[in-house]
Length: 160
Picture 1 (cartoon, helix red, strand yellow):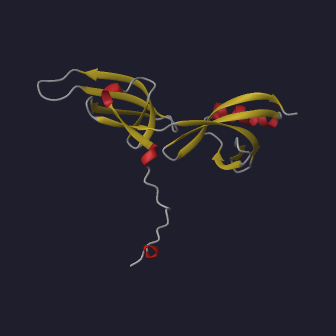
Picture 2 (cartoon, one colour):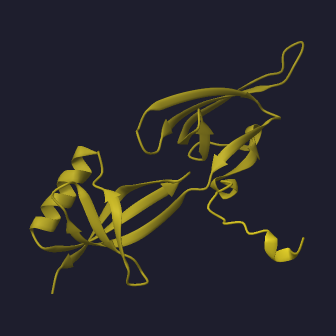
Picture 3 (tube, rainbow, N blue to C red):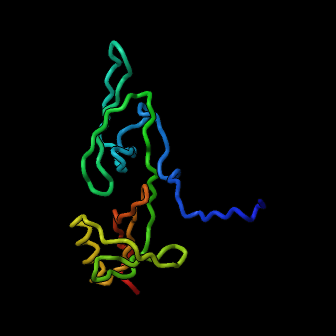
C-alpha cells in the first residue's frame, strides 16, 4: 500500500470552532451561552450556595440571539458550559429580491446572496424603507453556530 491509495475529501465539518468551553461560574450577564443547542445572550445569572451535598449552581436566563425566545438552564458552577463563537460583520446592502433575500457587498468586493431579510418587523420596515428611499445602507450580520441573521442597520447617507 502506498501513500496515494488513501484519498480523503474534507467535506465534513467537525464544528470545533463553533463553540468553546467556559466554566459556568465565570459566565456573567450579557455574555453568550449555548442552551439546548441554541446560541443565547445571558440576561440574568443567579448563583445558589452549595448544599449539604454537592455544588453551587448557576441559574442562567438567556434569550436566543436569532429567535428571541427565552431559555433557562441550571448548571453546577464548577462545570463547563459551551459558549458560542459570535461574529458580527458589516456589509453594504445592494439589493432586496422579491422572495425576501438580500444581496450584500463584502469587504473583498464579492456579493453575498444567501441571507434572508430579518424577521424583526421594525428592522425589516427600516431596511425596506431606507432601500426604497435610495439610501446607502450598511447592515450588521450576526453569525454563530452556522446561522446568520441581520441584526442591525446603519444609514451611511444617500447614494451618489
